[in-house]
Amino acid sequence: MRVLLTGSAGFIGRHLHRALDERGWHVTTCDLKAAHRGDALDLFRTDRTRYDLAIHCAAIVGGRASIDGSPLGVGTNLALDAWFMRWLTATKTRRAVYYSSSAAYPVALQGEDSGHRLHEDDIDLNRPGRPDATYGLAKLTGEQLAQYAEAEGCRVHVLRPMSGYGTDQSLDYPFPSFIDRARRRANPFEIWGSGRQVRDWIHVDDLVGATLAAVDQDVPGPVNLGTGRATTFNQLAEMVCSEAGYRPQLKHRLDAPDGVQYRVADPTRLLSIYQPRVSLEEGIRRALKDGS
Image (cartoon, rainbow, N blue to C red; front, side, top):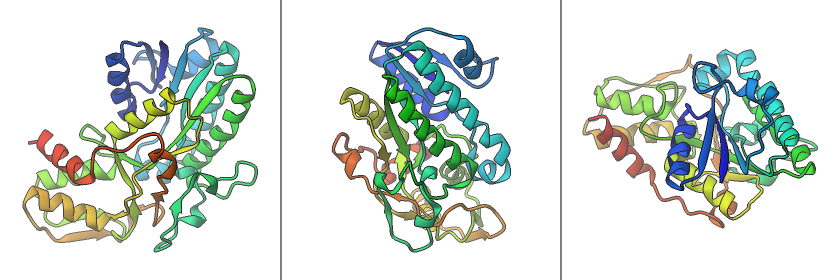
């Protein structure tokens, strides 16, 4: 299997690269910086190599501060994903994985205490609701463009990750930031927003496992990558601190960006092809242990 993996230097990309290597697949990598294994945009514009599978992880993101604070920079993903879809059709690559995002879902469904589990059918590509910021807009547009790539003969597996996390994730994201504070035994323990905002945490090992399951079983998607478990930021902080063995005061930064208030997946479609293996408790234990 000859595979192109974009975003190979990123969080999901690094883990996927290891998994693909373990399968013995021949992997060509690229990223968003020319100094690191070639620039993805340049490749899409000029390269005409045909691969058996292309996995598109490359994206400009960087946590909530970047999504809310750099909308034009994040919006560059519109061009990146459009060139990727054009490249698929130009090279006649027959299969691809497109990482969309839970940010593509309408924000109207993600209000505080909504309790609504996001189902794949909550996005109507012909009449979509307003997504979450320019990042969600880019991912929603990418899904729309994927339809045209499919019409040209490329099977596109569309995946919508919820809140992915792991031990080697950037501190731009909440989970590793919480782990870092617990390691330092920070007191007070800072949380952006009220702490009542809810997320669906899925370990990177399960993101990779679900991705490969979708490829192996030829599942086109869209498929939510999430567990369906609703956890508030306050609850996550308490779990992390309890595992670390201390009880700090929680300090809420109401001036900081906190995103939508309730984002949890309906995992029914995922569970038909893959069963997540790493619980949130186990993920917290691993993260604290790896940093000890």
